[in-house]
Amino acid sequence: MFGVLVLLASFVFLLVLAAPYIRKALSKGVCTSTVQLPGKVVIVTGANTGIGKETAKDLAQRGARVYIACRDLQKGELAASEIRAKTGNQQVLVRKLDLADTKSIRTFAEAFLAEEKQLHILINNAGVMMCPYSKTADGFEMHIGVNHLGHFLLTHLLLDRLKESAPSRVINLSSLAFHLGRIHFYNLHGEKFYNRGLAYCHSKLANVLFTQELARRLKGTGVTTYSVHPGTVNSELFRHSTCMKLLLKLFSSFSKTPQEGAQTSLYCALTEGLEPLSGKHFSECSPAWISSRGRNMTTARRLWDVSCNLLGIQQD
Image 1 (cartoon, rainbow, N blue to C red):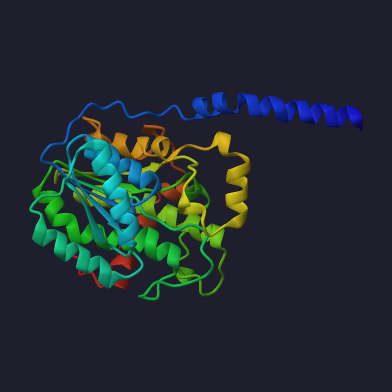
Image 2 (spheres, rainbow, N blue to C red):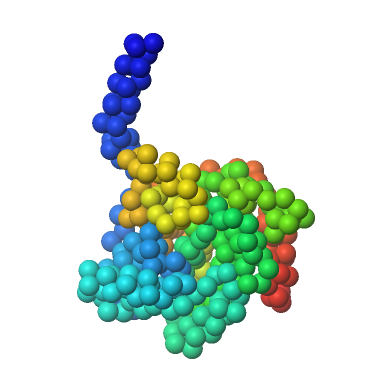
């Protein structure tokens, strides 16, 4: 028994020593684009913290006019002040956007369209994870409401401006968790059964399906779109799960920093010549495999129609 404990302790010790090298090997994706963005306009949702903040900082460093769209204006202003100080770019602006309330989304979009005549990059970064069962202001289950429907509506409202500014891009943050997701149209809002972990997976699958259907509909417009898996990142996304926070703390050496997690979003937003891959899913700055559920275009089209119906969007 003592020998087993010694072996286990030795293994753990070696694992801890090797952790930085393992993380480096797993986090191989780095955006190496040297593209500069003077005169370009960008929106990053949820950019007051984590991956979104690092994404906004990088884009500001390249000279873009960056809108931090977030629910908490105080946190947004703190993030914007930090980004301005670090990049020297004073065109980092904060606007209120609550993706759990369609009125807030419409108000944000209306104000943005009145303020800006162009939009070159929209990064749908914000999200919630493993929330206790709750609903948005419009009665949508929180995960599908914020992670999918909120960004679906925002993208719809800004789509004409994106087309007018083409070439332009839409980046949707998904997750490797989408492989465990299903779109239960008969239980979209979790009223028949609910598991908060799976609810997150379902919403991430919706992001992948939305990206593919959006790409199909935007073909030939000059607007391209990509879904992204950022990796396991130490961020506030895990705030609703004590278990996940504990695991992340225990295995923090293996998780990515927010800056590392932002790399694939930046890759899809900036890399030249990526247009033929519109609709694809990316991980570690490379196209990633999509499971059969994520490639089901019948489901993708039905999800689009259901989303439009729920949001009161008139289709052409």
